[in-house]
Length: 182
Image (tube, rainbow, N blue to C red; front, side, top):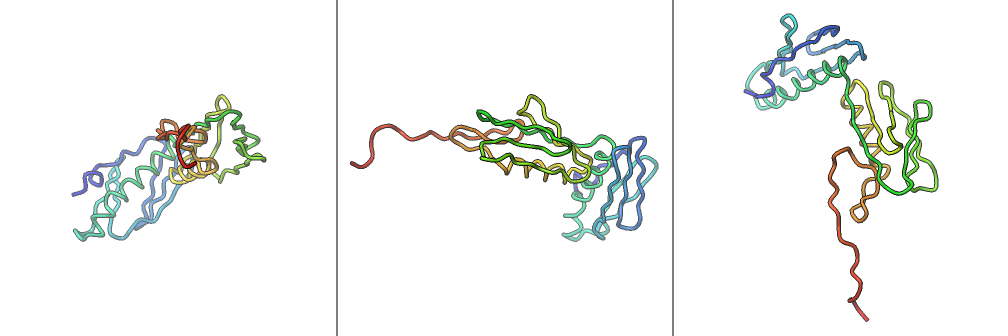
């Protein structure tokens, strides 16, 4: 039995869950999410608790059990609390700012990089170097944070670039002075 899959999901107040066969619809104060799950799992609701069970013991059913439970739990958490990803910008003169809904990055290129958020995602900037990506869909928030990081990933020699908060960048030694061919 899947350790993750057998855990129940508690539905908080102000969140409504509708189950229609393999389709799960979750509505809450932050937004509305729906997902069609695999036919190998069954989602059932008893009061304020959701339970994900598998139809049989085949390999695919066992694989989908924990995944489906995690996806539904993320939907419930997203519409009730939301998700955040924090990014740090390091480098002399590197900074970020929000213009309207868009994020504008000055990160050493000859031009500013402007990032337009999809629906349900908001940007916030603290101290010109800390970017907060927030929203109610964990997948979209994570993808948006990855796209921002990919604009200027941290380099290993000086550590300049955009990194996730708490990310450790392994540093390399630079060139040595003497030696080599004559």
